[in-house]
Length: 213
Image (cartoon, rainbow, N blue to C red):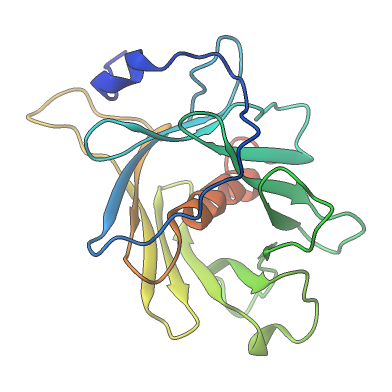
């Protein structure tokens, strides 16, 4: 298989998670372009591996097992937990809660829900703060539109500004075309955190990708 990025080989693959608190990722001044690879760097483990524009490892997901879809941990390059993504129990439709770090005992940061609105078939999912279950129209902070199966999605904030995009990764100089397991995540500055954007990718894959029920 064509190597996604050269610096991936420097990853130790130990899988050890540090006890240090996760760092808040500050938005850069220019857009962030990430390459997402739907594969874990750990042997015999499903997940996601995410590289920056210079080939450095940015995010990891190593506990993305097909038979255990209740909880997913998003980590930084060294294994520090950034976000825990957990399926919401006793909920109508497909809903997930996003927590800071590795603990789910605190209040969630976000709730991501699959859209069930047949009058707006462009909307795939929407994001509300915390575990807010009141009127959606007054609480949506992000809305996701497009087609995840085609790797063509746009994330809009509450002012309809483009916050992030999922795009196909094009082959360079007539090389072998990339499949759907390798694609780009483009994050706009100031509109969404990069770890939040990656969490939305993970959840779109749960709702609409090969990992869905």
